[in-house]
Length: 69
Image (cartoon, rainbow, N blue to C red; front, side, top):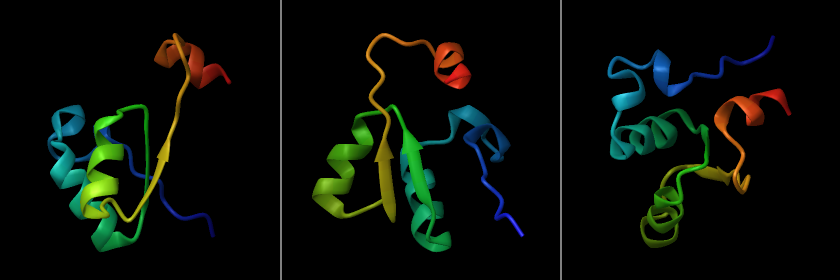
């Protein structure tokens, strides 16, 4: 069975979900946050949240171009 992979658009606040809520969900559910948002790196280094972090550095790729990879 493949575990579900929630996206911010699936959360009640959608893509307007604040970082702190994403971090809380990550810690509670022991989920990895995959993001292009560098703010999560600062929070991870200072407060050790989210649970795990994967920062995607893509240069000047748009989200659509990234999805095609």
